[in-house]
Length: 317
Image 1 (tube, one colour):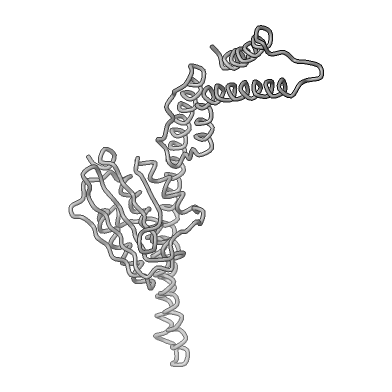
Image 2 (cartoon, rainbow, N blue to C red):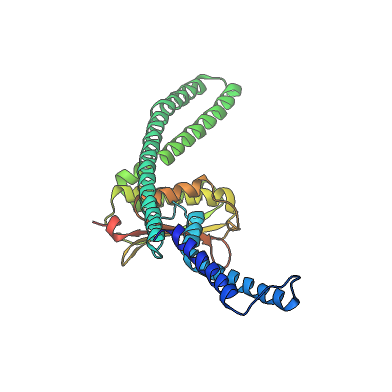
């Protein structure tokens, strides 16, 4: 029976019961209406409305659950599904909604994978151009400045020396940017060495103390999983440096019985109720690509705690 007919028959049953009481019962209505009669009619109307409301609430409660699910569903946190309960028509609607979520999550994962792959390719291209073009040009300028300083008189030699130092600093910065865009250490030396190099670089170029703890050996990870772990640590440390005001951050990568766990904890001011920015959204997107679960929130004692759990099914071979 369709939802329309169920509601119609419920209302009809209540109205027929009221009509039967008026026709067959001792209740009569005088002109003018007596107080007793008015009270009886009011009580009957209240009883009919109460019964009708209770029946409708029972019949439509699955729709209310579906409405709440529609309002709170977040494709960046997939997996939650409603139980297809209730009458046949409502259960079919919930099942259709679940199927729509499955399709949307699959399409989002596919489009995110393409976007992130294109982003990595573009980063690799820019890093290569920085290294080959800008880096080589600055190196040539540095050599020319050195040759000019060797032949220049003393007053000019000092200025050329300052220009050399500025050029050398610019060259180091270009190389650092290129390494951040394309983590060559990740491809050449592995995840642990790349993360150590990243944490050492953060410590060397700022006031933040980074303590790292990496299990050895780690389970063998797919290259896509290693890249996600590296990018999540990189984005987390960038957020800590820019926004947290922390003095210390701990980065832990350890084996777990059912996968690999990454923990990043700082002693900063925390995220509070600040809306998630592009960096955190990007980390969630990357986590979805490898089937990982990412949680981010305050930790006891202050600061922020990030936890990324990579399941063994996707993370190990």
